[in-house]
Length: 309
Image (cartoon, rainbow, N blue to C red; front, side, top):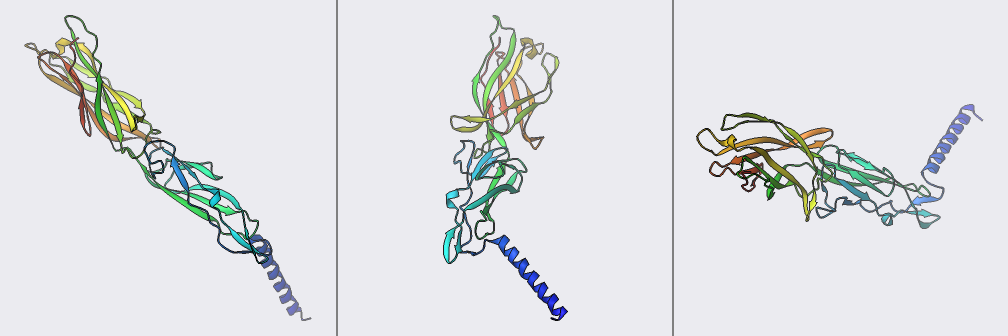
């Protein structure tokens, strides 16, 4: 035999072997594809029971979403010796394809998505393999898009007053009111979001000539669902008791007010982000030395008049 011809024959045999090995790695002998593998879309529900519906795709920062695939919707039909047979499902791998966030666990029929990452859209993806026991289909990909929303503002309303106990005759002025605060938007839950209000140092020049710097404070808070209202917290707005003479200008008791600047912030990716500036105002009436508190941002709510004590 011509040596060159022998070399060509050997090379051809080699190619055939490579092809057979590749084919064997792609499907078992005698199997072919009858229909492409498929599975139903990703099912989901928000972990927080409110707001409804739990199948919403708008979610709050740090909100969690359960995701799963219905294994009963898996279909993969192959042929074997002229007969149609069903191939079983293989592994399922979950990832966040874009937009940030975390899924855990990363394998199995279900996972939970945690809405970290950037504000805006995120895409959760499940990649499903067949078992490889017959014809090896291409992976099946299923995606769910969610939209992460950040807090925008609050709406406040008065709940109650808590006047202090006083002396007779009264010697002090002050006020204490409780307000309901609802964080918007309310079509998502911020129950897992960390908040705080940063109250600045407040200089006060009282009518009697007293100069005071009221210390600042940082007060953490969370929100929850109360009576089917989502993202609710309360805020105690108070001016502690001071001598009644603070609103006397040397001639008479006079009307007076002073304010506190408050920054509402949420924690996101390790940083505190301002979403609203609030003003607390404390009013005093000269005619009867009573005081009241108000809070104002997107709207204004005012407590009742109380004191003196």
